[in-house]
Image (cartoon, rainbow, N blue to C red; front, top):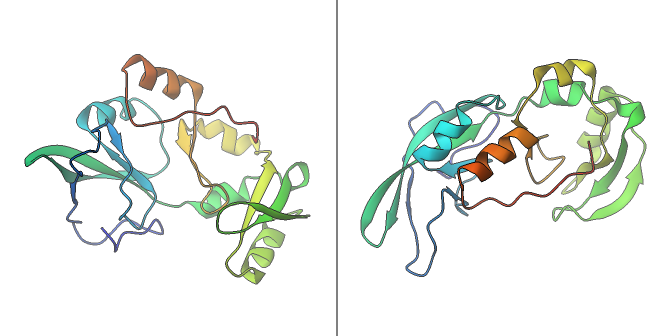
Length: 184
């Protein structure tokens, strides 16, 4: 699990076994702290819900959660970064960017007018990220109608559609928090 990354799908079958502490509360979605990639640890109910929605490029890997000695089937939902597609489909001139530290705290504003400028500026940063206060997307991106996506290191959290939020709430999925975004 520590060899996973989001640059590509692993060329091995990851061994994903997690054990909850005795005082931990089991939820449908679990946030493991020892996985080195972005994704979700989900139970079969959540996988079934996600199967009806348009997620960014992903794969499911079998996982086990051990709760008080009992093994429960879960899945690691592993995302593959498609940063080129996502970053190329930002309308940079209509977006507002800033530099953030590793905790995603704003350091200073920065003007970026194209994907090429973004790449050049990103390469000049050390231990910092480019984040956005406002992000405008191209029509090509909007046509994809993703229900779940994220922008690599630009944001800490994923963006999900209102219709996916509603489906997760209808099915009483536990372990997720939803916040209305005002960035896109």
